[in-house]
Amino acid sequence: MANPTTIRTGASGGTEVTQASLPNTTGTITVPRRHLLDLDDLTFDEINDLLDSASGMLEIIGRDIRKTPALRGKTIITMFFENSTRTRVSFEQAGKILGADVINVSASASSVSKGESLLNTVKTLQAMQIDALVVRHPHSGAPYFISNHTDAAVVNAGDGTHAHPTQSLLDLFTVRNHVGDPSGKKIAIVGDVLYSRVARSNIVAFQKMGAEVVVSCPNTLLPDGWELDTTLGDETGFGGLRLANSVDEAVDDADVVMALRIQQERQEAGHLPSLREYSERWGINSKRMALAKTDALLMHPGPMNEGVEISSEVAHGAQSVVEEQVRNGVAVRMAVLYTLCAPGKSTRIGSGEDG
Ligand code: CP
Picture 1 (cartoon, rainbow, N blue to C red):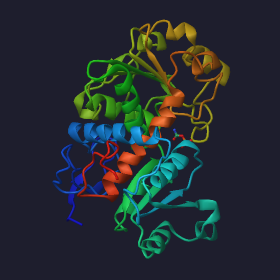
Picture 2 (cartoon, rainbow, N blue to C red):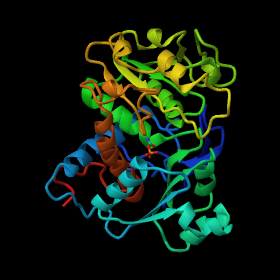
Picture 3 (cartoon, protein in one colour):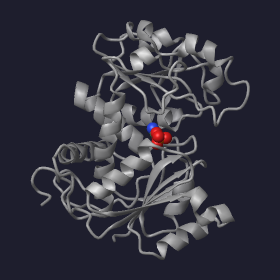
């Protein structure tokens, strides 16, 4: 494995991490990227390469026999210290379709519950010659820490309120499949911006792809120093991000409306008036969707609190791509695992090149 370079992450990270660049679209290796910890250190081209690779993976998923030997002999461990349905299952499915051995470790069923430290858990797994470690952790930065103590590729499957890079990749992939290049498109993100790692990663991801991102939320769910009815400057790391004065302003003429889950497990008392009032003032419903473009996409990372941040009517309506997001999650995670675990091979499998 090539020596990684050491850089600092961008606005949302601030932690020193080791990384290098992904294979390019022609499959030529520059320096292999070892980990996927956040999107803010990926370039525009790297993101597009991953999305292109995911298109090939989607073709594999659509086959009668969904199996390729691309990662045969590789061992992937998913280690989730927080609950998950979509992310954990889709990483497992992604690894298995690619022919890898996938082992799932949940914190409650591991020696973590007996007091073993995160460091010793990682060292123990490292001793078993694993190739990739997919980690979800309630503490922001945990995957960065892990990446400094293992030779395996580390994939951040969501860390605290910090980042959820594969969710953003699948969201970009879904938008790209519907509206093409996201550049110049208006993306409205509505909800719990303060606690949402999806919000943070998606702001970075869509801005990086040239989209106009507008967020709307109650004052109490804005990060420190952010004010409604302003546009953030470059010094914040989110330059150009519009903090709308109202939901109606945010969704007006939007190409994509993304509702965020209210992260009740992370919130303290006093952040919301009541769920009913939140739903009335910030919930995405058919009246608010009518303000967006006629063919606007309705997205939600899941799991949804129907009747709170999103009405059942729009969640399951014609504009909703929520289930498609889940399906695309498998393809995107296949692309990520393949890119990290099979460095040196073409990123283009799924077009008859995968045997
Ligand atoms: N979107 C998302 O991360 O969902 P899960 O918590 O079910 O993985």
